Image (cartoon, rainbow, N blue to C red; front, side, top):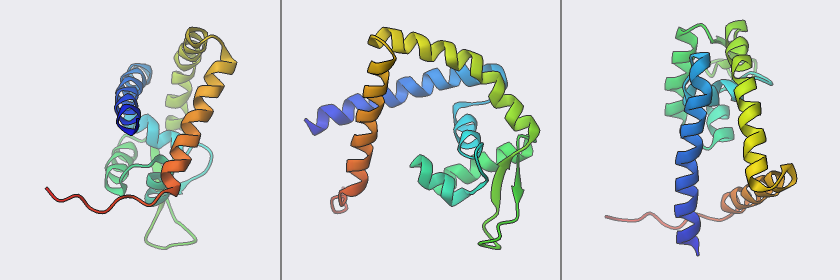
Length: 147
């Protein structure tokens, strides 16, 4: 059962990345840039904080964060809690880019909910995925696999 869950999740991840690329493209973003920018819309976060929240590596977040700053969509700010770990925050251009995604995102979300049988069904699916993620976080990972 774990293998089926993993394979389904891998496929779902690929499908969501494809949808995200299509939704982000009109705003001049990639899925990765949208993901990192979206993580700091509510409050500035360190690269490590974004990586923890998103479940991705710090190095990949750093690369994308640097690209966002270079493009003028985000900026680094001083971090009062840690002098060396700057906080990433969206610029006005970054907020505007995300706002351009909203109409397509809303329309696709409505179509997805309809395909699942309604908004309540989509909420149930989302809650099940949150429970799965929480259970995985709570479990001790198996020992290192040797090739």
